[in-house]
Length: 491
Ligand code: FRU
Image (cartoon, rainbow, N blue to C red):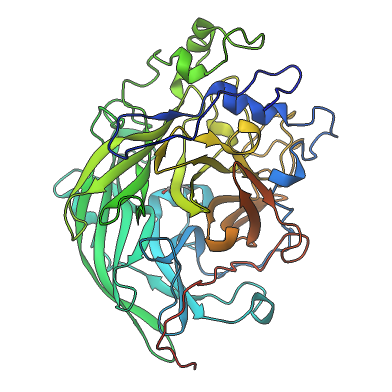
């Protein structure tokens, strides 16, 4: 990659594969992340999109439909096998979403501490153009029985608990047993939201059974919830080290290069005391003699050390996927960004893509980039990952003016692009389809499924497919199965 004038060169990443059990952790460096700003146009009109079209999600219209007026939904995932194929069940497509009650007296921004996993279903095999505008998803209710997920906390003192993101596996593709991997969150807070003790995040699982008839889909089971992983403080930061730590969003899969093993990627932070000034020259990642390199001490004293995300890896040590062992992180973003969320492994043409979502406001001092999905490519599950697109890592961002202050979804900067927070929690599906949820469009809050978009993925590049749907926007909540039940005869 030839550096953009005025900007440093990105770090050289070989894409070389290591054993998943190796201690090598790849780095998303400051030199890499600065390639985002390098590709931003400094001369656009205030509040326009300053990023290239190829990495920008098209504008969502402000008159978007609600998925369901009686429920807010956000992070959403599908019923998958060990290779992220999306299955229908007895002729129904099924999705799982974090949800909250819009009529319970709290705001959309306070939804997280009330999150419950719910499910939705719709008939499979109908083209998006023949569905209702909102995608036609039928709300099935909460997935877990009331009072079940709190049990993983035992006798810990909590003021409330929530169910955060994860993934749902169909254990045998011709069966009906499912296992949900999710994050059990326990809070102990004062009425104004201050932590009395740090939140407790436990990556957990619950087994259940899916059922369907001609009219509806339902689940049984999920009474027993098992805690699988809590951060170790060595690879993954604990709540004692930093009350604002992230430890969540399990995604499990089998690696064709290591058959018979089940792995999990998840969102973590680099272990150590909050803000410790220990980012290294390797985390900065500048080439020797780069005239645009930063001085390490300057970075260490800039506040950037408060942002140290990683993407964790664990391996299951038993066939029921109940026992797990931490492995070193796949990638770290020390002094680059604080959150690498909902990670997933996506294999295409023999390449391993690690996709993750992140926010503009979680970038470290001196770094910038839009809200959206970021990606890295290597030759194996553990690789010296190369950040996609000019070495930057940005795969698909919201329309954003990087020349203007970020604001936030709950307190927008009037100068900022009114779609800078239009969507979040993107998940890359088979064939490059990308689903997400609507957060804010022109000040209108969402809590609904966004229009599905499509990216073309090839080597170290991705590009929005503007021929998909209408100018790149597919159906709202168009989340199709790519595997249909063999025995389904049609309704
Ligand atoms: C992403 C996310 C996830 C978390 C959930 C909580 O949108 O931050 O990491 O599981 O939202 O609501």
